[in-house]
Image 1 (cartoon, rainbow, N blue to C red):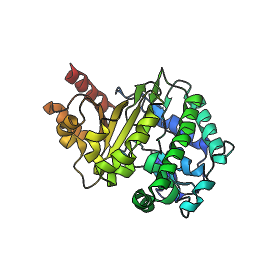
Image 2: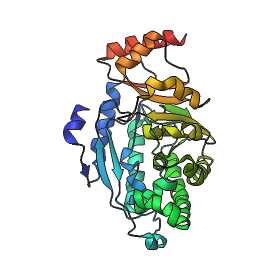
Image 3: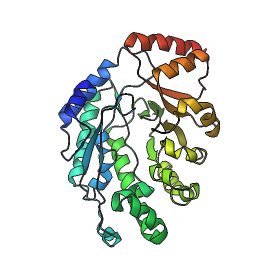
Image 4: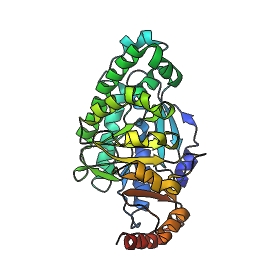
Length: 329
């Protein structure tokens, strides 16, 4: 991670990262974790395509941003985004998917390189779904997306339908090339889950009402999820008000609660969050001192996967895992 932080400064870059270097990064990072006796499944994430791929496939200008922060589940990611593709909705009918597009070729080639590098030693994570209002963001930007929900709903519906077809291509391609790991899918929501699982996102609805989600988000999400063996999902802290509603998505298998600044960390209110999610398994992020104290106090609810960061060394992690296993019994 120190080498990564020297190379990438946390600023947007326009050049597609060298994949030979990126694969070496994942190989080194995952090898360093092999002495940990935790419950993680080593996996590399093709994060270069986690958002910008969708817009890039339609002519958008893909830009990359490194995410080097320690403790974040995506440490080492180089994420991507595009500026809005359309100047206005009149250009929508010109959108076409071209299977010979440069970004589709890069997507397939990177997946093949990562698969061949993994060789059963680690898995390849699925990438995030960009459908529904997430996709409209790519086309016209966030502000215009929310305005269009009310002023141009027919165009939003056309875009949502386009997004469904595009996502089927993207995620079918992932499973055609990568396949599964022991019959399951690696993820950053939970380390591994049985079946071919997609990674749905409700991010735009974090700034809407529950009724807006029910009108614009549920059907597109459930439609896409139904084509696979299920889905996992994440909610940022400003979207935790959606927890009860999101937990009822058909075939949803697990949900990650992402901490954000100016919000109480999930681990501090976990009993309440656990009740609100019903039977749905949760994942949360926790710093090591807080996790260790909750472990000592026997205040860690079950049905939760804990991503813990900040332990000082390998020995500390492994001693902590001894306590975790005793806690289970």
